[in-house]
Image 1 (cartoon, helix red, strand yellow):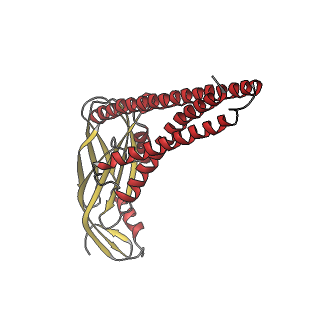
Image 2 (cartoon, rainbow, N blue to C red):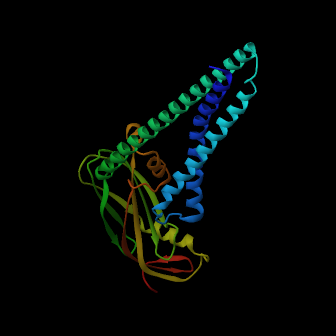
Length: 288
C-alpha cells in the first residue's frame, strides 16, 4: 500500500480515536451548560438528550473529517516521491496507525476501569447503606426520662431509660438549662456499656450546683430575683463504635458521627419545675 493511502488511513484512525474523545467531552460541556444556564434542577424537555447527543456527534464527525483531511494532505506530499522516500513515509504512517490503535485501546481500557470502579463503589454504597439501616435499628435509643426533683433544696435525679439490641459502649451526654438561656446550667457525660435489651441509668441533680449554674448566667451577681420556671433536662445517646462497626458504615456517616449529627445519635428531653430566690445573690428556697 502506498504512503498516501497509509496516511489517509492513519488520519481516519486518529479521527475515530480523537473524535470519540472529543464527542464525549463536548457532550459533558453541553450537559453542564444546559444544567447551569437552561434547565437546572427542573425537568428537562424530551429533546434535551437528543440535542446533547447531536452536539457530541457533530463534534466527533468534525474531528474525524479534519483528521482524515490532514492525513490526505500529508499523503499528497509523497504521491510523486521515489521508492525509498515512499517506503520511509509508509513506515511512518504505519507507526501512526499502530500508535492510534494503542491509544484507542488504552482509552477503552481506562473507561472500562473507571466503570468498574464506579460499579464497585456503587455496590459498596449499597452494602454500607444496608449496614447503616441495620445499625440504626439495633442501636440503643432513649425511651424516656423520669425526673425526681424535690423542691426546697433537696435536689433530685434524672432516670434515663434506654432500649436496643446492640451490645456495646455508648456515651450519654446530658445538660440542664433554663428555657431563657441557651447555655447549660449543669452538664456531664457518662460512658455506658450496655447489653441487649432495656436499660436505665440515674444521674444526680445537686440543687446547689444547679443554682450556681443559674447564678453564673446573671449579669449582676447580687441581683434580687425569683426563679419559678421549668428547667429542661436534655440527653444525647452516642454509640461508641468499634473499628469493624465504623468500617461498615458509609464514609459520610462516619464523619457525621465524629461531628455529632449522625442518625445513630438519639436525643430526648424532659422538663421539671424549679423555684428558688436570690436576695443579693444569696440563695433562698422560700420567699421572704
